[in-house]
Amino acid sequence: MNILVFGKDGQLGKAFQCVFTDQKLGELHRIHYVGRAQCDLSNADAITNLLQETKPNLIINAAAYTAVDQAEQEIDLAYAVNAIAPAIMAQYAVKEGATLLHYSTDYVFDGTKTTPYHESDARNPLGIYGKSKAAGEAGIEDAFKQDPHTKAQFAILRTSWVYGDGGNFIRTILRLAKERESLKVIANQYGVPTSAPWLASISLAMVLDENHQLRSFPSGLYHAIPQGETTWHALASFAVQAAIDAGAVLKLRPDQIAAIPASEYPLPAPRPMNSRMARSALDALMNQIYKGADVTKWQQWQQSWQEPVADYVQDLVLHKRS
Image (cartoon, rainbow, N blue to C red; front, top):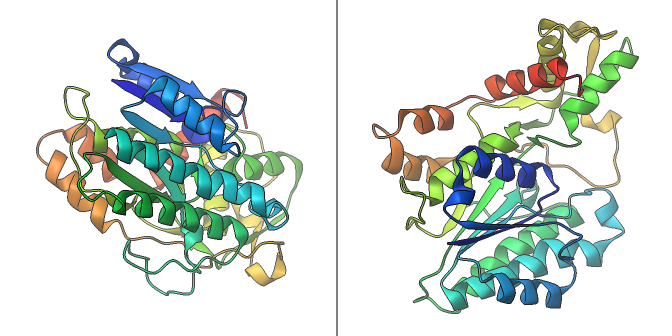
């Protein structure tokens, strides 16, 4: 099987490389990792040519334009990478009978709902980043509607607050905790921190069977986040305490992190106040596949957000990467 991974230099792309290595899948399949240097996702012809050259059976699109504030000025670039590129991948998948894994975001919602969002809830993004990601979702769905009899399949996995090998909120907080004795963090935006390695592992558990071959699954939207919910303020406090518990020497203590409303920290692009997402669709699928069959993967799927965050922080502290 040929596997093509877009976004090899991002947090999720790096996580996929680690998971493929750990599971020794490179010995079974031809895996192509592609970054911006190998394929500019704002260039439609470059994407098409690469797909024709590599002929993937499984496309993993872990790439995205994620500069949320900058997207308000770079509208064409955001749409090229987040909307047009996934549609091209989907068109290839439909034509060739391939499987497409694409990653989307809580930003496709406006955040006004007071309960978790379901896969069936209407998209209503606030800023350009969210609008471009929503357009990407729609582009994939439209491509598959063109041929309802295709053997291809797709999963759009919406996730939130991703952290891994790269720049992210947790690493920023730990860096500031070494420099400052006080900090203000937003306490009225809700979501779920998602570990990139966790997301990569769950994705492969979803699409590959026990023989590491593609399995059939219902195409559509899936919410892929750990159990639970939190706020940016609570996450910052948790990460700082986890770092202290791991032996980090910090100027900042959790009780020195002040809780503020989002209105006190204005940004160029609006953020959804509620990024909580219900995981009913993927819960049902993972229950069907793994409950009672693979205890490790089932337990991993049932993890709350706290355990992987604590493990991540401990690893950063022990290897002095925070």
